Image (cartoon, rainbow, N blue to C red; front, side, top):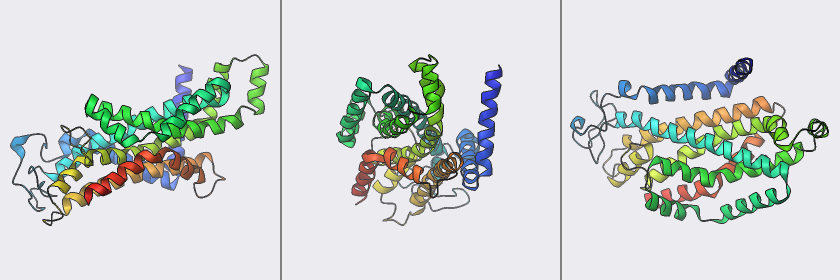
Length: 318
């Protein structure tokens, strides 16, 4: 019970430090608002976008009845779709970000601290994963196993843990020679005890920052996959809204609000997680200026996968 209260108190204290950070406060406020929108979507949305009986004429302009108009393909209320789409983006981003953080940190610590055959095996796996053409493989996986969000999250985790693992490994290679780690080893502590008690807490700030930043990247990637038609066709997501607007010729017929509204939603969500990530960087590394660690980590977790998705989105929009 004392351990639980201590851990809870530590979490609350850390959130308090983020709140006192200017960028962190902005990120927290936006994330809380998005979470409330996702939780209370049925109460906020004026229509149920999944109910075919609540659909109006296609391509209606914004009005009091439909604040953002209706979709050009199915006549769904765009504002209601935007509200319900928040659920998909947040869930996919948070679940995937946490899963990547757990897998990447554990394997990175194991590779850096254990060394030897474990390090060689894990790093060779990372090298292989880096050269795999990820987007074609994603298309193959979704066609074989389906386009449910469970499959999409597993695909994101499969290709997303390598960057964090390499970053954590490089940090652990320095930490394993620290005096307190050597003292624990000389006192007879086992390897797993040292990794759990001393190494993992030492890299926790990097893992937390990675979770925030990777959530931002994953939300963009999910929108990209849905835009390419690789998302769950039965669920409403921001990427699917963009795909429907593009395929229906929204810009061609002057229905610009269907695209702008969705783009603003994606921007706000990504902006919130980016502010949190940079705030955590400023808290745990107050001497670092310009968020250099955050930028370096974001470069690792972004990788070729998100680049390929964005390039395919650009090709599809042409």
